[in-house]
Picture (cartoon, one colour):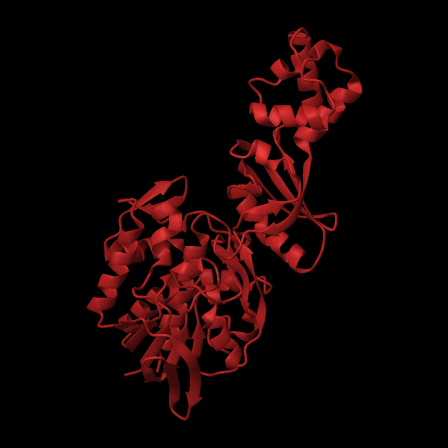
Length: 406
């Protein structure tokens, strides 16, 4: 019987352990926290958006562009849904976003733990792995609790995002000691800090809009949704979706700018016409009154100030130039990005073990036979919406299945 050691008890590690045991392997799972799956409990605001029905290659990022989708196709969303249904999770569909019917992330963790116990996976917690040494017959795993032996190893130790949950980056050190290169690890799905001093005045405002990230003047990514304005800068799902590109630009010491469009459904010409028609309807309104019903007052006041239009000025007295300035601000609100929030606030990381050094069919190391990778430790990150967990399930399944082969 093949003995497999899984390093890391997060989503991908648990999936790898269960899959390997289901395929007849003897499995030892080592987790350095006091319990497995701590990060899983916080996903989906505690409800666990465990996959998404809309699956496309563009939902996954890597320096090795084709790599993630090759793995996703080996264990897709439908297979994930069927897998968890077999374990007891009846799913709830919210516009393609899948959650457990109980709306409890703990349910997903519980069924994985129950399955691991059923399959006799040996789970040992509070064990810190210091080194993985290839030996003549398999591996020696050196830990603070002594040494363990295994025929094969699955390294599923996570990234550096949300380190309090266990993803402290220690897996990267293990991978580097084994000769693997890292793509620079940066915060992703994270809030962005901005330079301007007006953010404290608009903190707490939420508004629908489009966020575009420019690096040295070139647009790298854009997304639409609810933007959250904070005392340090910008947040919200659309900001998270484009944040990896800001992280990369900042890491490369380039100029990073976010352009916010608060009326993305209009072209520039359409929006100017809209404003003029609105003025024609009620020209006696002051400009402060004119924007009521369109935008939050804090935003309206800021735009009028930046456009140099008096709030008390009659809408009908506005010049063509003033209307043009105002519309340009609302649809092209530029803000300089100076930093991202830290790994503590990031949901995932961009970067990790270079996937060009990993077999795209099996997730086995191209350098160390018998060593496999799964989950966030690899240079793969998905967009918001259950995609990073789908990567965990897919990569954990593939690594577990392939490693269990004698």
